[in-house]
Figure 1 (tube, rainbow, N blue to C red):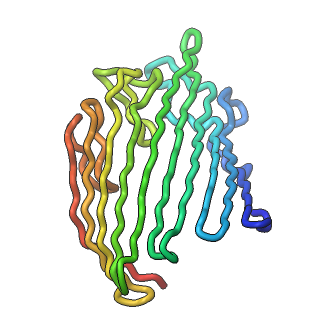
Figure 2 (spheres, rainbow, N blue to C red; figure 1 turned 30 degrees about the vertical axis):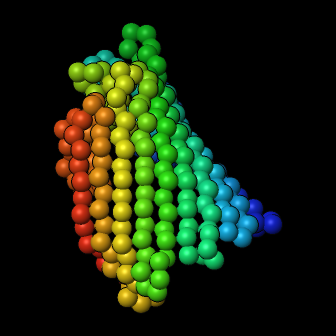
Figure 3 (cartoon, rainbow, N blue to C red; figure 1 turned 45 degrees about the vertical axis):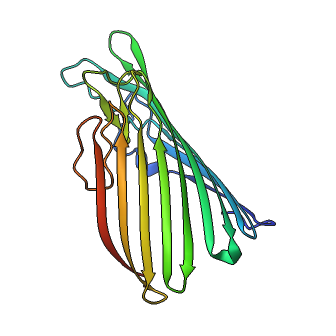
Length: 232
């Protein structure tokens, strides 16, 4: 992590050598490695950030040679993320925007070699309004774009890293709406009541949140919950 220069700060990370220990030196596949970088800029009420991470040789599609004659040769998966936020009304209102591009590329050797790929672009808008005293309201909207690429088919779609691939046939996107009312009981304790809903495209089955049962393709899913948070 770099020092901060006029609101600008950067960071870089890379994987340690022992992350490759799961593969032997005789393997023809790339040894798994990762590296990432980020830039953040803050100036008063404005905040902007950019992040990039790449995985090399991670076999994200979990290809094995058992019974199929196929073997993982090499591959990369990358994530590009951009975010910005601005505070209004003396800190009472915060609005944020996020954009993310996910890309998977992999080479699989059989008799020859096959290149497989999967991509998706997502974005989010969210905000928080500290209405008065301990009362706050939060709103969010997320759009998961339709995936593109060669992974999967219409009859047998494949989920990779949260992205559903159907060979580029389309209609794998989803939209999520969320609302939350929060009450600050103290500086460290908060109670909130939230509602969220996911509307899936006809070939998508995204869940409304972690732990939720997957809906059928094209179905919607909603959630109502009470949450308690305490900071130590």
